[in-house]
Image 1: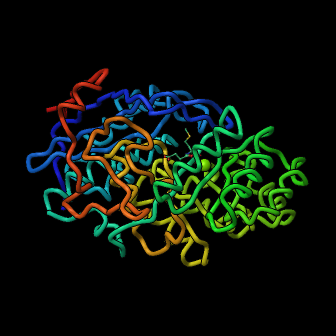
Image 2: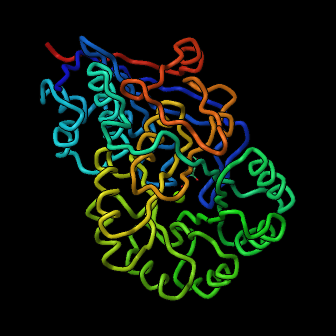
Amino acid sequence: MAVSVEAVELRRVALPLVSPFRTSFGTETHRDVLLIRVLTPDAEGWGECVAMNEPLYSSEYVDGAELVVRRHLLPRLWAAGPLEGAGVGPALAAVRGHHMAKCAIELAVLDAELRAAGVPLARHLGAVRAVVEAGVSVGIMPSVEELLDAVGGYLDQGYRRVKLKIGPGWDVAPVAAVRERFGGGVRLQVDANAAYSLADARHLAELDAFDLLLIEQPLPEDDLRGHATLAARIDTPVCLDESITSARVAAEAIALGSCAIVNIKAGRVGGYLEARRVHDVCMAADVPVWCGGMLETGIGRAANVALAALPGFSLPGDLSASARYFHRDLTRPFVLEDGCLRVPDGPGLGVDVILDVLDELTTSRELVRRPA
Ligand code: SMG
Ligand code: MG
């Protein structure tokens, strides 16, 4: 069902993180989020842009995303006239890249469309589960002792799997310590955020001793061939995150032997509908997928949880409770229930934005009306 977008609000919101989150590329202390709110005659819709403060995880960053939305994407959205969520990707396709910015607009239009139609996003995407298993991503810590405390705390809360961020100087020893303290029953994986090179293959093979579910993105984003070479030299299954920018690239990575598992993030591939296509490509090739995270607020989290309810998502995602990230979320908090998060079943995203909290955390807002 096409919706007529009358106006779009661009909002920047700053949420302090409950604790700093350090990866191989940097440390996040707060989340500076761009939200997209579309206004239509029947319903409004929300989208969250996952671009970070600085272009370190990928080339996109939040100030750039906001500029691209205003200057390059909204004019194309207006030109397209009334459209469905599924029409947003094609309407914006002439603009190269900027997947996170595009994803936020598509999600907002989808949300408005589905709220108007009374259909939950999960159902629209093809979800088959009412709850999804929650994993937790644990940053690089100042010491192994602090890491063990953090991991122990998360396991006590019931998280179903733990991911350790690694980088040169923080890899084999922390993984060994976590295995030794918590035993072989914990589902454990690592994420390097592209911090290694093929010359590190022998060192990374030392991780084979710890029965990891996977190693995520050891090498640079554009190095599919290198990942295939590495995958042949280590036993730990290679999973790609940054490299997988579309369903086509996913198919190519699988064909090349670059990965045995795929992390799906809608922002990285340009939208939830392309994310579903990545899922379909992987499922057809028997490649397990799981839902990645970008420290989303409840808005993006609701959409991720819906996506993770699709049948091919056979591993727990980077989908944690709101309290793992923020003191206060923009929606009713997501909470762990027996190590799982409940898939929202209301229309659209199925969560409501708490406008008081939103206003309090808003750092800027602008309403852009459709030109007459
Ligand atoms: O949302 O729980 C989360 C964070 C998951 O580790 C996470 N994300 O490379 O997968 C990744 C990182 C990207 C964001 S790091 C600031
Ligand atoms: Mg990752």
